[in-house]
Length: 262
Length: 215
Image 1 (cartoon, one colour):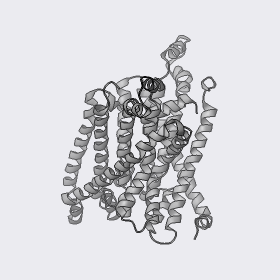
Image 2 (cartoon, rainbow over the protein chains, first blue to last red):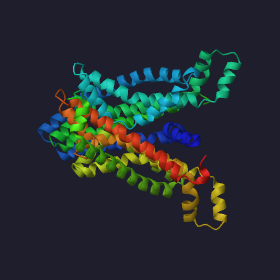
Image 3 (cartoon, rainbow over the protein chains, first blue to last red):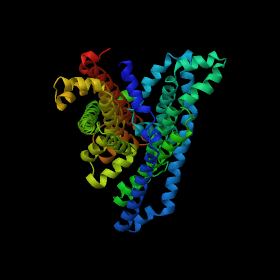
Image 4 (cartoon, rainbow over the protein chains, first blue to last red):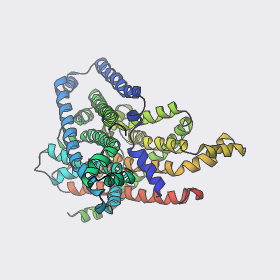
């Protein structure tokens, strides 16, 4: 692959999305879709007139419990991933480790092809004594640490070396250059990476129900098992809306948390 | 039973599932490439249309795969059809995005020159713009293949074909013999396929990139 191609791959893969940089009203499109789909779901469920057992699976307290589990899985795994990926990404882009960087990026690219469900099942088999929640957290973290690491490294690598040089030239220490120059300049791409990690984790957390760790995926499995299409559709739509909402919050963060002047 | 024994004792079945997996991913990506290219060619010259196409594809892409497969069941039932539809929808985003980025990144002076030589719009597209955008488009197809490869494992849940069957049979036997072997065979098989496809794309890139663009 030529370097120009690599740049394009990176640019189209991890660059901040238009909603983060474009006009402000672009940010209103996603909430509009979410509201419309949410209203359609409520109307649809009521119109379909669910029977007693379907009603039980659609009760608000039960759904809210699953939603809580889902959010918990997503939040905990995202925090772990960021705590691992950001320091590791910083280390791998320092001078001493630059040789390892292409290898890590290559593995991260192939890692996209690994099936999340496979990682979850393997860990569940290998760790039968660990609570399902933590097995799921481990699987989510293992699965999404590579993309997060890649974004941190790409973000830091695209910082103009002349600016780092200038930082050192005006007498900043390496640490200060990292904190005051490199990290702020890498923030937009890193925020895009955090957003990707969150959305990825919401999606993979839907698979946690397979090993008994709860989450909204339970509604899909139950719907398929009991042939209750209403429950199945409600679960699917709720997961989709959750992912879209979190993606939207990520877009807000990308837009408003980036350092001024970048 | 060791992992190796497991693999050799089921070699034929595993080979068949691997073939099914590869063939499903290949066909879905091919379908997505045709659709994606058509959408990109139709929209890249009008910026709001291009944004609409990319935006729609990215909303679809944001929907988690399990939910997407779930939504397919009431519409298409179980089997191959829901798997293919869900995977193709997934594969669209990287392809549409890279096609639009690639096509709109072509130097307008080149297009002008081609028009000046008397080429028609269609000819400019076929002879100038697409060849110049091809490396970027191919990268999109490659990214899309990697993503589809992993997501395709979930197809087994809607009774679709492929190596996901191994993973789900490992899940069904959780705690029993061969659970680990089945899950490992499915997961490693998919990663192996991803590597093979990646190598194939590098080769295809070499062979199909216009000679003037090669560095």
